[in-house]
Amino acid sequence: MSCLMVERCGAISFESPDQNALCIHMLAAVHPGEIGTKKKVKRLLSFQRYFHASRLLRGPSPHSSLHLLDEDYLGQAAHMLSKVGTWSFDIFLFDRLTNGNSLVTLLCHLFNVYGLIHHFQLDMVKLHRFLGMVQEDYHSQNPYHNAVHAADVTQAMHCYLKEPKLAGYLTPMDIFLGLMAAAAHDVDHPGVNQPFLIKTKHHLASLYQNTSVLESHHWRSTVGMLRESGLLSHLPTDMTQDIEQQLGSLILATDISRQNEFLGRLKSHLDSDDISLEDPDHRHFMLQIALKCADICNPCRDWDLSRQWSERVCEEFYRQGDLERRCDLEISPLCDQQANTVPVIQIGFIAFLVEPLFQEWTRFTDGSLLAECMLGHLRKNKERWRQLKCREQDTDTPAPGTEQQGTGTGVP
Image (cartoon, rainbow, N blue to C red; front, side):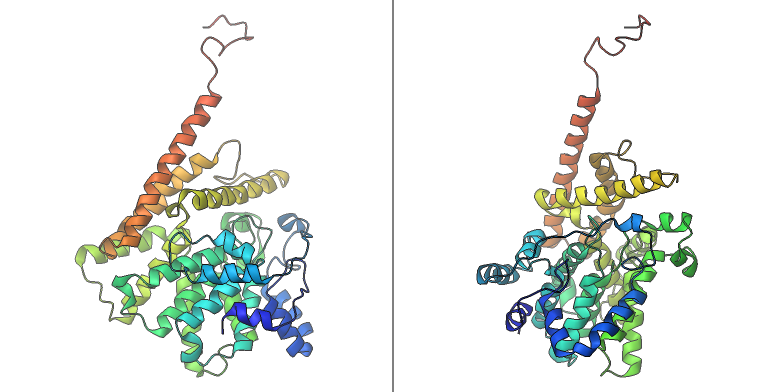
């Protein structure tokens, strides 16, 4: 049964202003005694959602109107899911059609598609509880690091798991780990980066000794929600411990400061032609690479989608810069809107991070149709940003003969 079908079986109402998944409402009806406990646990899991962080980071909670899903919207969402493996998948439209429940709906569908619910004998109530907790602990106020980004990364991961070079070797456990890590890789992200947490002496920076602070928190939060939901409680202890550790290895790989480490290893393997996908360690490494690609694949989407993501991530940067300015802190790189425009940021991001990684991914896939499609979008988008940068420079350049007007210097 798909998540869409399950949602239609329950009461169509919402209990929270940010319109959490309908299945969570159903779970509350089934297990009314767990509501208070769940809220207490979330306070422990979430480092910004409740009382761990300054109100300055979150701002006022939005009071959006409630919308009920009708059959037309559900039908359109279901139709989109039939094409979830296409690279042109519009996650923004899908999120609207699912009333902000894109992550839960997508994961339910993919777990069914891959047969993971049957293979791991997952309890549907516990699965919905876990996915609802993950979706809810993404901060909807973040322009970029929110549940829609998680859903987008998960959809990209699904596309990569279907790559012919990789798909035939993947076990159900590999697929389970890849999708779970993609969905939870940024859970409870505060909308500020690691340097901000370090210079403000946040307790998480101390806890994780200023190393992979956010990624460590995303992982530990995910483990906490897995245990609280009881999703894996029926599995052997050694198996659940292995799942938790491998999820950590995947999520920690998304730390952008480790980009050169992973890129160097990938290049070395490809140059030596020694990747053996029968080897579990090699498969896990390629899952790490796939997740890293999915996490920064926005410039490889078509222009309309790519530009939206670019504007969102830059808006999040600028918000951090504004916060740092208000707190009399040094403004972090890329966070000053006056000094760093969206085209400038994106050109640098593509040139130094995205292009090198996806060129090596294309080598790994032997130039698959998807990989070539992504590189094509990447090149076109890079050129569009260059054009926009030139227009900005032309706009900022004074007309000939007017540069020094009013200075009294007489310099032409």
